[in-house]
Image (cartoon, rainbow, N blue to C red; front, top):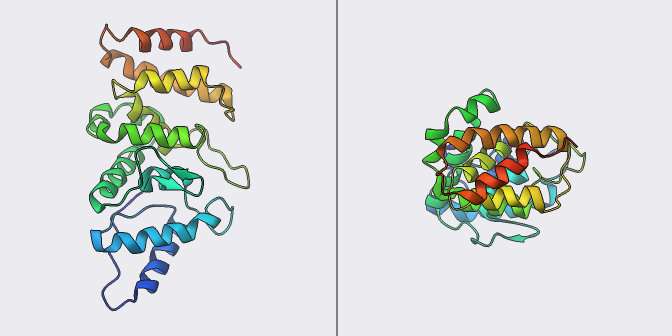
Length: 220
């Protein structure tokens, strides 16, 4: 689970702090929330990690989580810009904590009220998904878990944002993305959309029409 990490004390040099955060993200696969003075060291550690982030060994870091948290990777910066403040980082870490706090995707879809409190970060989630081509990452070993809770938690977060949910569904239906395990992917997407539909206003015709198209989509 993503966590708030006890920070290195002042007895550690700046380079030792960078190394500490590097190995923490590499080994745990998580992004820590830190204080503002520590942001410079954490960001330096993330930049050092990027050349290794997709390797099967030794990195367990998640490109999906890190792009969402930091707002950039070695392929560029999200349109919303890089994360520079501890407060913004803490908000995105809190999103990851919430979406990971479920035993299954079904239970995740059963906690919509809790996740809805984080829709202020839905735009960053959508930009992250687009940046990665709606994939979870680019692991060199091809590892891909279609039921990844972080991925579907971010999808669900976007679907809970009234002004963004039609954009996400249009992307996935008409964007021509090459998605692994497409059959299972669209089955899960359909279940996720159905969980959100009761919260949609009758006037959201675009999203409702896209949801209807998804329900009638031929099985790959």
